[in-house]
Structures are given as structure tokens and as C-alpha cells.
Amino acid sequence: MSRTSRYAFIMAKLYGIMARSFVGQTYRDILRLKKVSELYDTLFPGERSEAPEHTLTEDLEARIVRAGIASMTYVLEQLGDAPEILVHILRKLEYQSLKAVLRGMAHETVEQARIWDLGPYAGIRLEHKDKVEAIRKSPYSWVLPLLETTPLFEIENSLDRDYYVRLLQLARALPSRDRTGILRLASTQVALANVIWALRLRFFFGMDAEKATPLLIPGMVDAQRKAVARVFEIPPDSVEEWRKWKYGWLLEDQLGEAFQAPDPVRAEQKADQRLYTRAHQLFHQNPFTLSPLAAYFTLKEYEASLLKTAVEAIALSIPEQDVLSIVGAG
Image 1 (cartoon, rainbow, N blue to C red):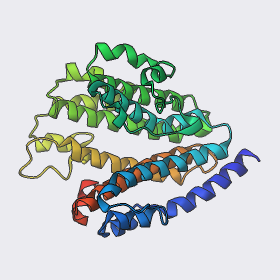
Image 2 (image 1 turned 180 degrees about the vertical axis):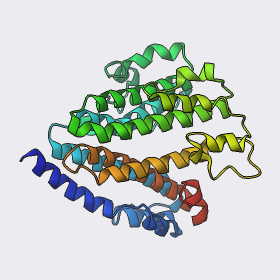
Image 3 (image 1 turned 30 degrees about the horizontal axis):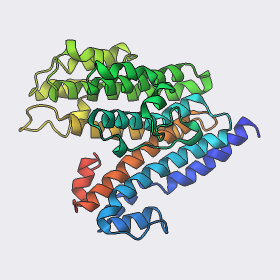
Image 4 (image 1 turned 90 degrees about the horizontal axis):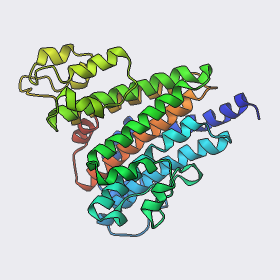
């Protein structure tokens, strides 16, 4: 099968999957459900085991993530020789698993760490009992020497930076037909990740620019670097200055009369929504390149995040409109 025929076949499948995704109006519909069991049956008909309602939340959240993994590994299997950048995007979940294991090791609760199985696309086998040995034999072995000398949040930050630096490297190395769209999406991800991280470092951790800069992801263009630097310069309660800021749209729903300082959590919700919009646009462009496939992986990650929020909201009886506000879609 030629590249064009293979991509046409895959995209036909993915268009059908996206048409049935739980985003937009269908997301509003599921928020009106009253029980987690009802949501489980809606998302995965016939798969729910008989169990008390209160035990279903964690099981359903895990099932949602596994479904996302399955949808991405399906694409990789259809491609045959899986492109390295798509494998790396899938491995974002592996980075999350590794961080969970490291937290478990630090707090002696490693058996409780949530580990996602990426099958043949895994770079590390964290399901093995000897976690240290599994890490030592993996591409993440560099974290082991840090465990004795470095605060856990800095190790997790190093893993985040490692993921995004590698993402940019792989995007820049792509052939021209694949590079433009994916590099634009990756650059947007890095910029938004840095903006949100800068807001968190200043307003949650009280860091100034000097202490925070080494924790940011390298690889931004000059305009993005300047915008991130402004996070540490603008007076916390200056509505006018935050509104004029390059990323002021992240705070537009916060800049009222009672505004005292940016809320990084609400800003992150806006960032996720913008990234979804960019990925959705890219998904419908250049159909015989890797661009829509990379966009699809991003869209599935976003959908999984929305669905996990829905699970928690229904379990806690949070009203629909409040949830839409939480996810930045109110």
C-alpha cells in the first residue's frame, strides 16, 4: 500500500472516530447524567462490571485513558514503521507514569502508582516489580542519580522539559511535508506550557525570574521568551498590563473589578482549550502528512482530560455549568 493510500485509509477511520467524540454538545449531554454507572454505559456499552457506584470512578477514569492509548496505538500499528515523533507523543503518558512511580518511591507508596501500558511502544517497563532496575535499563536512567540530591518537583520538572525538548527536536527533524504543521503545534504547546509554568512559579511558589528561568523549557522564539519574562514583571493586580500582555487572552475571564492576581489554574484551562482549537484545525489540513495524525493524538489527550473531569463531576454531583466553567468551556 502506498503512503497516500495508507494515510487515506487511516484518516477515514479517524474522521469517523472524531465524529463520535465526546466534545462540544455531546460533552454537555453526558454532564447531564446522574450516575457514574450511566456515564460508564454511555462511553463503553456492555463493558461495566457489576460493582457499587462509589467504586466505579477510578475504574472508569482508567478505562478512559486506556481507550485513548488504544486509539493512538491503532494509528501506529496501521502505519507499520511508526514515526518516532508519534511514538514520543504517545509516551507523554509514560512520562506521567514515571513521575507517579518516583513520587511513590519518595513516599513509599510505589505500589499505588498508576502505570499506563503502551505495549510495544513503551520505552520502559514500569510494571516490573523492581522499579529502579526498570528505570536503569530505560531512556530515563538519567533520573536515578537525581533522586538523592534533587527535590522531587525539580525532577518532575526535568522530565517535563525532557519531553518537550525532545518533541521540538523531532518536529524540526521531520521532512518538509510533515514539519510545518507539527512544528507549529509543538511550538504552541511549548510556549503555553512555559507561560502556565511561569504563572505557577510566580504565584504559587513565589519565585522570581532568576530562580524560575532554569525551570522553563528551552526552544522558544524571541517573542515567546519576552512574553514569558513579562510574567515576572507585571504588577500582580494590574488589569491594564495583563490585558496588554501577549497571552492576556488566557486571563480575559479573570480581569474584573475584584482581580488581584492571575489564577494559573484558570489560565491553564484557557490554554488547553486553545491547544484543542489549534489541533482541531490541523487535523483537517494536509491529509497525506503526519500533521493530522499528530493533531489527532493531541485531540484524544484533550478528550480524555474532559471525560475524566466529567467522571469526577458526576461522582460529586457538580452542576453542568460549573463543569463547563472548570474546563474552560462555560
